[in-house]
Image (tube, rainbow, N blue to C red; front, side, top):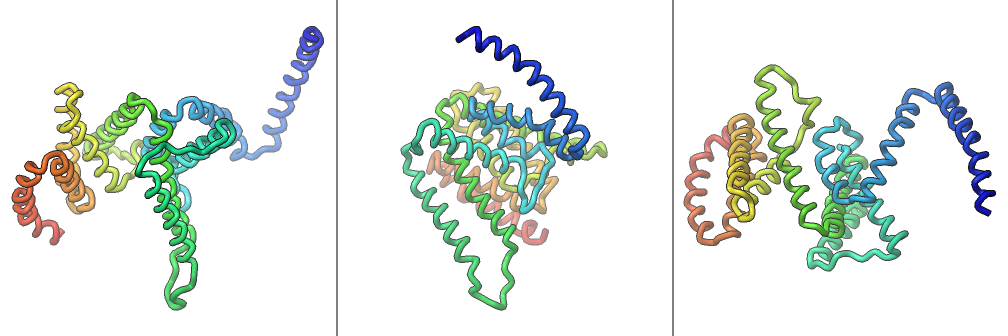
Length: 298
């Protein structure tokens, strides 16, 4: 039986080569430029899927950073991060159903409130399609689906991290990758424009929530992670200060950037030590009184 299989394989090899050449020739003559581009990216996509199946945590790192680099924006604000998160969710569910033949979530008190929130979001979306006020204009369906997809993908990302990141080392890599790219993005975004250089092709526009997460993660690691070397904690403290310089002095009008970041630091300090939180109350009151005029007028 083995020699028969060997002879069959030898006979099939030339046919496979000829078939591949004919397929390439057919694509070259019949396919459009867009279709050829998709064919060229097909091996990359297959390799990406296989990599994410082997190392799901690596996929989460790539998904969190890709949207800030790849200049792709689809309908209703769709970007690469949302596409990759949807891909990771699909691969995770496929592995649970086909390979493990069960969908079992990590036991946590946060899972049921999260799933309840998703159910409420879908019910709200469905009820929102009813014509309650005939004279009122409804938001476009694409915008509504975009908002719903953000809620679903955010909850899905939470479940992916909880169920696929079992190693503290991967969680550390995810955190440091985000902080490193955040530091690079702020430096590039604040320094290059001074030399007349555009940063649109390097760093994609980010919202205020991005800076809130950057400040929260950098400050909490610098203030609370006693396992870090003092040099790294000092570097993270410098990142927090530079972020506030960038938000406060260069983007003061964008109050949704630096004001929530300030409250975020106050909340971290208050939850860490209620005594320090009490000390911050008069400091916050004086600061708020001093900034009230500037914040309201600008």
